[in-house]
Image (cartoon, rainbow, N blue to C red):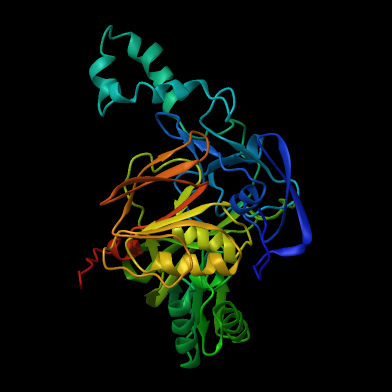
Length: 420
């Protein structure tokens, strides 16, 4: 599923890793998610309660589906998002919440009983006899509805904590974060730039636009080089700011060794306590999914994720891609896919007045009403005024618009104000 293009993977450096006992190859710069997609693996997990097949939905830290367990024994980490786990030689990852295997999960029978397993079903049904709850009912329910599990062995990894101070903390390194950090640094402020990804640039790494006459990616690389050369700027990649507290104090978790084999004496993670006089929140936005029947099949993902896998990791998530949305984002994604040589089976825009300048099957004023396939997407149903049309597809990218990532402001009682 690899395609040509100027991505951020190093094709000269092959990496071998294992998933569910099978050996696969990827490239340096791949995440576990991009490497699995490149190897044609779409089924990566089972859902929490019904054990429905689950695939990769996003390309970032917001991933809800592709949760895996990494490592063994005292180094075992459950519920690691495959979309942020970078691959390295010797990486061992396994799927969760399935038995005896991901392909054949006996607990998938729960999906057949879904109409009878509504909210509160457990507490209304398993009340008698009282003694059975702790010894029988609860263990069975927890086994059926669990996610990952720790090994129970003593933790062998090393973890650190550290402290930092700055005049300005910038959270996020998209174009806004990069410009904020540069402006503050040029004014003489001590700056910390925290980015949860392994590289600076945010969504610029996944898009094909231009800034100041150069590609968005080259512009981000130039900005990173400029900031890295300034003595009053500390760049902290693989670092997630997790909380905002009184007095300008912030908590941040740095993934020190999740992207490489753990060397003796090296900390796996470091928790930072950062004191900042001022903070700029430039965490970007998250794409909204769209509700329609069976919108959870493997192969259905956010449109921005489809774009990211094509542009950043040179992976085509499908050979027959359908795009569905209610905003201009899907048209930008379609243009990038066509430029990369990826076939678009349909472009579905729910806006009746939408127009399309691309040479693709275009459906205006229509919507996806359902999907087919079990362990992988096989077809979608497009509903429009004239009726339902079925289109074969192995990938569906959806976009319901964007929500700004304002979570940290809410930690200090911030309230967003709607501006149409």
